[in-house]
Image 1: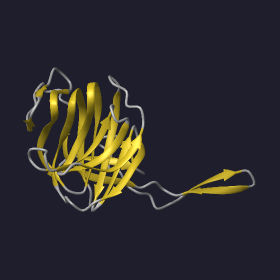
Image 2 (image 1 turned 90 degrees about the horizontal axis):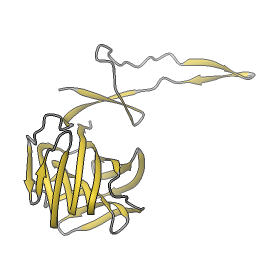
Image 3 (image 1 turned 60 degrees about the horizontal axis):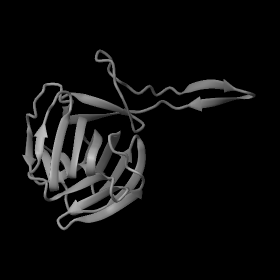
Image 4 (image 1 turned 180 degrees about the vertical axis):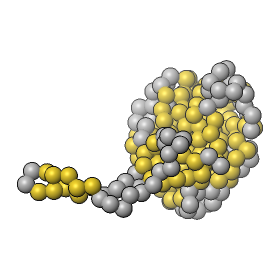
Length: 212
């Protein structure tokens, strides 16, 4: 398995030939009349469940439920006007960090699905909803909003969305800022995927990592 690295919650790209390590010796730096002690930063390593940048021109390992899904080159595109549509990855996970770049080109809403059934209809979702004007965490069935953050969701504008699910705690980040926290114990594991609601949207650089 390949591994990515997170530095105090922020992703960093390590040099392939360098093994990250923690140095127990603190750094001492002069500051005015005294000294500041900087403790070493801890690099956390999480196994990668999957990564897809869609550069291969295919949608291998993805299964659609409603809608038209294509790879026009370098991203995944979904279109559907009659309700919800999902595209679900074969990969599964329980305690995960899952993120991707989402762009609502037109219509209502776009999001990520996690701890999902194979067809997407039983899941948690983190969603950007342009009509309601919210960033939200929801679950289904029945559809229920667990947490929401009021905002103007711009169409034809890429957003980096990340969810961290650990046990019954779920956190959602938008462009690197934590906006939502909730707890729910309905689903403990399942598939990873994407969702849209009466929309045309694109998805890129989707990745999921397993938490310890």
